[in-house]
Structures are given as C-alpha cells and as structure tokens.
Length: 299
Ligand code: 3HC
Image (cartoon, rainbow, N blue to C red; front, side):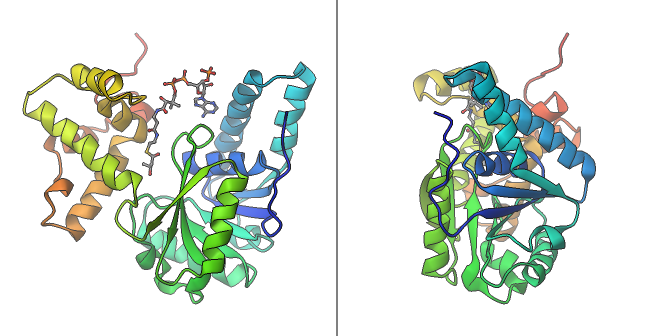
C-alpha cells in the first residue's frame, strides 16, 4: 500500500531550488516516490513553512490510505526523512541528478540561478525550470550545455494535480526529454509534452479563459457567482474562474498576462483587465491575502 520505491534507475537525487508553494509540492511528490530530495532557498522561514506544509499535506494524504495508524505515521516520517534542506544553492545541487528551479518568475533571477547551478552541478545532471509563463530559451541564455535543459511545469496543489507538462526547447536532447518523461511517470503524474511556447498547453488556454470571465463580469453580462456556478455545474470545472483566479493568485495572473501582452501586443487574447489590475494594486491578491475577487476573511 504505501509505495515508496521509484522505478527510475538514473534519477535518485533531486534538488529543488525555491521552497514556495510549488517547490514544496514538488519536493513532497518526489520524496513520496522514493527519491532523495534537497530543498533549497535563501530564506530560512520559507523553508520552515515549506516543511510544515509538506508535513500537513502528507498527513492529510496518509489519513485517506488504508493501514494502521503506525503505518500512516511511518509513511509521513519516512517521506519527510528523504527531504533535506539547504540555504546554499551551489552546495545543494552538487549531488543532484535532476535540478528543478521553482523560484519566483523573474528572468534575471532565474538566469543568475542557472549560472550558479551549472557551475556546481554534475556535468550530466539535468537542469529544469518550473516556469509558468517565461520562455525557456530566454531563461537558458547563459547555460552552456542547453541539451540537458528543459521545462517541468507542475500545477497547484502539486500533490493533488495529476498533470505534469514536459517542455523541450529546440536544443533539449532526446535523452534529456526521455528522462524527464520517465521522472514524471515515476512520481505518478500523467505527462504531456509541449514546445517552448507562451504558457505551454494549460496556461495558454487557462489564463485567457480567466481573463475572458473577468471581461464578461466587467461588461455586466453576469455576476461573478453566476459565472463561477455556470462553469462548475455546466462545464464540470472544480472551481469557477473567479475562484480559480483567487486560488492561483491575481498577481500571478496579472504577471503572466502582462508578460505576454508586452511580447505579443497584437494578440487580443492577451489584453489586460482594468478590474484585475485595480485589485492587484490594492493588494487584493486572492486567497493568500484573504481577499481577491472574493473575501476569505473570517467574520
Ligand atoms: N495536499 C493533500 N491533500 C489535499 C491538498 C494538498 N495540498 N489539497 C487538497 N487536498 C485534498 C483534501 O484532503 C481533500 O480530500 P478528501 O476530500 O478526501 O478529504 C481533497 O483534496 C479535496 O479538497 P477540499 O475538500 O479542500 O477542496 P476541493 O474539493 O475543492 O478540492 C482542489 C481542492 C483539489 C484544489 C480542487 O478544488 C481543484 O482541483 N481545483 C482546481 C485547481 C487547479 O485548477 N489548479 C491548477 C491551477 S493553474 C496552475 O497551477 C499553473 C500555474 O502555472 C499558474
């Protein structure tokens, strides 16, 4: 029942750079598949929060599995024991077979990180980014060996979402690509492949959809709650577009769209939303700030 062995031969050690929501989720699913994980971040409080949320999530998952209380507790303890932490990117990546960068969406920061990573990682380590909207080619500008670079795009919440997008640039080698697919399957995800295009598959469709819902509301065609109910009940989406935008984070939605609008100014699907811009400038970023399109404050 508590399967912890991973079928992969060539990837045993995974280094995850960035311990936010995505980095912690990636660490969790990798460790629960039997891989050795090192989670690195410059901020110690971010690492501490990540370890707490991984523990909470594993406990939630273990409660739903069959077995005795001891087996459930052992599963959590064993998985947690596979995750080491570090504040030093360079030393953290030295033994890694696979490095997954899950830092904030800042191109200069990511380029700086990959310069450090390439210098310290093994020559045959595979280097990947979990970027949600940036172009792999831009991120990889400073990487010498681009054949071992690719994209692994996870979805939030990582332990629950079954998909992993595997992105290959023109320079990603067949071997790198095949290993990334194998890693995805080994951590229990269904993999899909996409070229290095804006938003890959999911975000390229999802983000314009979320903005189209906001435009519908801005035109006063329908209320937010009715649009959400319509998409939940009429299209079987687990969350309506406003609920999902609040869940993803309005700052993230805006960041992605602004980047695409700047790069592709003639594409109407990438037009900004005045309402969303206003909420972001007021600091109403969705669930994480307890207010976005909806309020999550407890009365
Ligand atoms: N860890 C462990 N278990 C979790 C969890 C987590 N982080 N989050 C939810 N769960 C489990 C709960 O334990 C619960 O299990 P149970 O029903 O057996 O008790 C189950 O998931 C359902 O959770 P909830 O009852 O809290 O709430 P929901 O039924 O609404 O499910 C959801 C939550 C899984 C988030 C669901 O609403 C959903 O799938 N929403 C859509 C999420 C989505 O679209 N994500 C993609 C966003 S786009 C993205 O990430 C890309 C990026 O680049 C922007």
